[in-house]
Image (cartoon, rainbow, N blue to C red; front, side, top):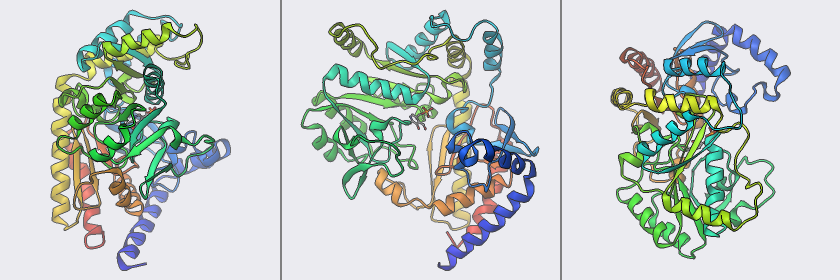
Length: 451
Ligand SMILES: Cc1ncc(COP(=O)(O)O)c(C=O)c1O
């Protein structure tokens, strides 16, 4: 190990000790949880933090979280986007409190659902909507619809994508060849038979992959946000739309993370024209809910294809989807929380955060860079932005990511345990940003010359 590696290892040891000493209650809970949950947590992602044992949450409100030992944290992870508009916004608390006493789920529609669909239509410019329980399901059902209405079996995704646990998308490029994503468990079908994968921003590869005319849809985020942040080149989206139209391929834009851009996501901010748009995570204030919207042309093709098959289970929909509670909270989020004014504040704060990070990085001579999509900010351990998922994956520094994550937790700040992701919410304050930048500066100072 070189000198820099030894420095990082030494810092990590000190942070692990500091965390262990500071969190005896979390430690006791972790020991107890290990008896109940394989791996010690009810969802394995909860182990992805840099902590030696999970930090147990006691409560959270706005942009603040309190752990089981009573420490207060400024929360920039915000449930990895699930609580992007702050923990338990007041309008959601009121709506849940009221609705929970008036029926949660009945397999019947409610008026709140109509209001929510109308709000989605005016926000995203797509007339028709369906509701699911998660963003994963929204993507899964859209792939099924796209195949059904085009009669084509293949889909195309970009290298480094993540769209939830949709098996079809668990394909990566390794040395230019499509393979299953490492770590994928229990999949017995060769996903590369039906999924093409090319690098983001590679228009020539995209054109070659669409040219055979057998791709039902391209599914992509407007910018990749799950492998660091990869922004589209100037003109990439225009080329993507042009090529998909030319080859009869539908375009699905997944706004689940890029809803950080503004009230209508990246789609409205940049005038994209998707056939389908999918979204989930924060849209019902943390109550499970996903949605997908589509054009009138798609709706007409759906009706046509449905008329040609016998009545039966379509393979889409789950029992709790679109329940009365989710529809109420979705409506309230769209009407009262995800407002233009809220976005203006969040995005301005994210800009301060990004500028503050850049200043600290420069002050300590680190060759890192910062990216921002509206209220979403990341710092990366390379001097220049990535152009595609392959580049981003090659630049990952897990040991450094873990150290920074734990260093910040030990100083009262939570950022996402993946690729240094931070979100500002309508509840985030300038003081919280200043507190974060203070902790980040200390971390950058410790790493100066070694990272
Ligand atoms: C872009 C994108 N789409 C969809 C999903 C799936 O969301 P969920 O896990 O809530 O189903 C994720 C999750 O991280 C995501 O990043």
